[in-house]
Amino acid sequence: MATFGPLGGALSDLNSADPATAAATARELERLGYSTLWLAGRQENNLPQIANVVRATSRIGVASGILSVDVVGAAEVTAAYTALEQTNPGRFLVGLGGAHGPKPLATLNAYLDEVEPVVPRSRRILSALGPRMLELARDRAAGAYPYLVTPDYVAAARQILGDGARLAVLVDVITETDPARAHESARGGGMRFLTGLPTYAGNLRRMGFGADDISALSDRLLDGVTIWGDLDAIVRRIGEYRTAGADQVVVQLGRLSREWWARLAEAVS
Image 1: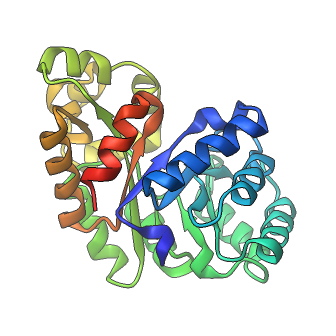
Image 2: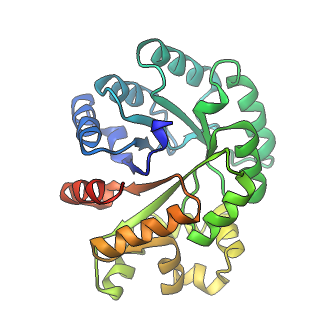
């Protein structure tokens, strides 16, 4: 499936961009050779922008990464998918997650029951971290889309998913060769907020990080779940994720210059 080529790019800023700017950026990523453009849903409905960039491009896969099932209704997802399949078949990958209530697995299962008659399993992917969510991604979707994970986690996730499911791994890439500056940069953005959430904190503990690692965002933790260095080091680290079992490594492009977008696309094949 072309959508799951080796390199994807995530750009949440496109959600709020005007349609022309978003379309031009998507065309640039397509020209550079990215397999998938992932648009983070966060706590909003970005289906209109997804439709815009799908229709503005011709080859690149466009994924919702991730639409919150607590925010966006199943009927809206199926309507958007149906419309795009009529004009641009096979281009929209429906990424789902964000079930934050007391029974997230039951919530996701019920939501999948609603979308399943329209959106086939091969065009669905789930935000999944823990073993039970990975099993759900294996059984009811094309695969999983985890974030803030190590290559060792990827290898374990691949064991749960099996060979048939897809695994796209979102990573932060920092183009800094000095360790102290790289770690300082990694601690910025939303890292501290996310590691404070029970889902992410629990998964970090499963990966062997202690409470002190998580609360302080220790160098050990950051070295485990982020990628930093010069181009050779970054490409080598991306290779570690792929060797461990990731079908696609998805880079947070908002942290990088456009020059680096091109350098990574040329170097990762």
